[in-house]
Image (cartoon, rainbow, N blue to C red; front, top):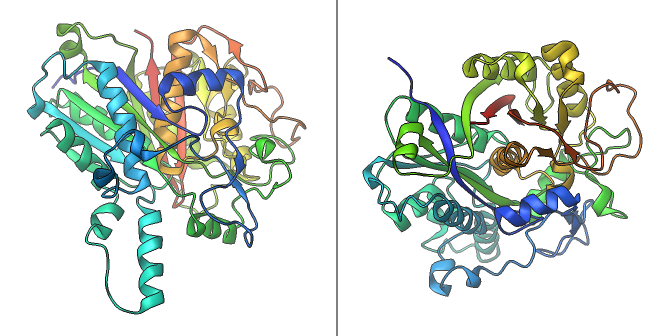
Length: 414
């Protein structure tokens, strides 16, 4: 059976550095940091007092009040980015068969704010009275449900949960379903809204977050010697994936081909990466094999690059091991230096950055680099502090999650 080709025909985003995909892309090129003091709750007693929140967000600008109350912030973000992507793709205007349109969505945590509010309210009163929307607002798979309901999409509909690899896994699942002819179009992406007391407190307890409270905007500094943890972000991204011939037939604008998807497991530790980057190496190798691309084809990698002491070293070593000397010819970066870490939404947001690099032949910077880390090969091109113009025909994006979950996607210019 010959597998069908899968292409990108639309995308949308709401992020800490831009509330549309275009605003997000322009902020990436400007090297804009989304980190600032937290406004969503009182951080007086918290070790970390900053995050990358979505700015100027009022749900009532997007939803009726009654409608907004039925959705967690996580789902609101998801529906907003999906609306932009669907409009961008023009699948509604072109009258696609909605029975052949699916929605696959990734989120690492889901409706954390809803869970926190409801459980705390119950604990105060000890009377088991809960909002009737408590469970529907909290569960991860409610976001693809809302998207399908809004548009009447009757195709495959479910959620992927693999911590910070969740939305990358959604892209890979969607790719495989389209390749097998199970759908013509899939709206896929991810969302996260974990900038809450329990979210920040939980990650603080793990010693995972930066505590650079005196300089939030420089706290996310992947590959820098003085990095001290990741910066929590929130938001959502959506990519419209479509079968190639279907897209051509309706005259859609095609931005790139999703050529490869790789998956692997570290099988090592709940939260720490394999010290030799074994899982990272395998997931990139598997992605290249799936794409039928050689290591020399790669022009750009958007790294997982969270700004953690161990993770950045392991991933850098894996790239050097996989690509050999060609590793020094490509541009690599970490856009988390600007957006912070969007957890389950990171994969799709960074995939959109790869699409921007392919479309515009420019690689966004890794900001906040001040001091080289002697444990990381200095010959690697990390695109520090300023964007780099480069012909980008093939771009890869890595996302790794707690539990050792690894996912990698590869996009190719058409």
